[in-house]
Image 1 (spheres, rainbow, N blue to C red):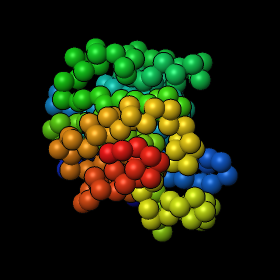
Image 2 (image 1 turned 60 degrees about the horizontal axis):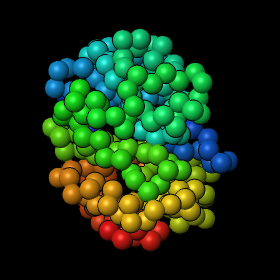
Image 3 (image 1 turned 90 degrees about the horizontal axis):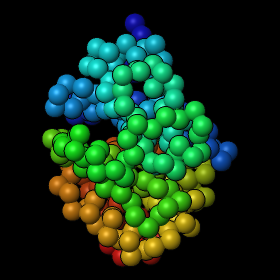
Length: 233
């Protein structure tokens, strides 16, 4: 039998899949998260190019209605995902569209219309870090924060290239702000307010693109990672 593409995170509400991506000479695990909304539709966070197996699993779960690009870097899988699910609306930052001429954005993630159309989801922009231009989502029904590159880490399940790179950069088995991001925090006071807003949400878990799902103690790890780059949270 074919191995399932999706792994359940929250029963009947959240699933995730991982795929390998090469970045700066190391192979990372990149995560796509699938959220079943209250109306039964699906939201894909940081969409992956859909394989036949993934498409079949998603169609069995419900109609794909939303494709979310969380920052200006996690956009490459969205054009093929939008082609595979033509009825889905694409949400993302204008900065991602500027990088990818193949990308269609239907709703700017910074637009208040997003919250009006999806009241169970709250958009929390990571202010002060325009290099990343990331917006974290808080899914109220499951108390889940969904991010991409706000933090990352590596562990024994990662490819040897990233385990090596993570040891060099201090990210092995430690939750950290990504090395390329920590040098680009333009406004630390604004970033502190944004991170505090994320910490204030009653989230039970933090799901990001390049780390295992964080549950117990995620707030301490998340806050410590940002304090190390001079953000006072």
